Length: 292
Image (cartoon, rainbow, N blue to C red):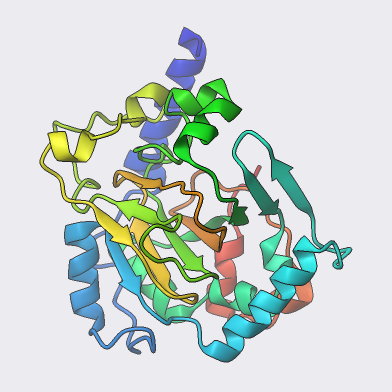
């Protein structure tokens, strides 16, 4: 990155974090209703999220909803949905559904779940936006074979290596659509690494600075949570925490992910506007903001 581009990025980061999207403590209250996916009270969930940087909700998707989403997903990957775009990444061994918000009304509605949105806003202490949505099929592959697919894969530039995201304040919601057990391709997270710490250099412009080698958590004394769960398990996590996708040859993994930020890094979203009209007026603002 040239000096001018670096300076522009640094100025943009300062404006976003210190002026435009700065939290106002006390401006957001916790959601009242307790989610069906957890028996914990919202205040305890918020404290856990602040402390660890992640939450796991087993069985968040009810079986009937999960079945509808799985049916729609199968139809899309079999090219039976002309309204759904499917692409492949040979160097990552992924298949993507590029517009998952159109795939199923259940997926679209979940992105505006009042309980989940309320919890994230209480965490950020400001309004949030749905910055991006993706759905991917992670094809089974060993890390050794994965490294041979691309030079980038051997340099730790993929989500399969320890890293944090470089978008500033961001929370992701990821939902497993397949059972993910020990030995499967699971999501891994290092609790407490979302906090400011001398062990973790922070940058939104220096990409290599955000990547870490094998064995990094153990070397620096961090624990690792291996996220296993049945289809329908939902994970919420601060992407400033160090995390990765583990690759194995055991099975493919289907999942979808929502990205939420206070207003930066907003991507264009493809969705059914008639479906959007059914969302509660107070939540439609998640679709706003300045998007690219």
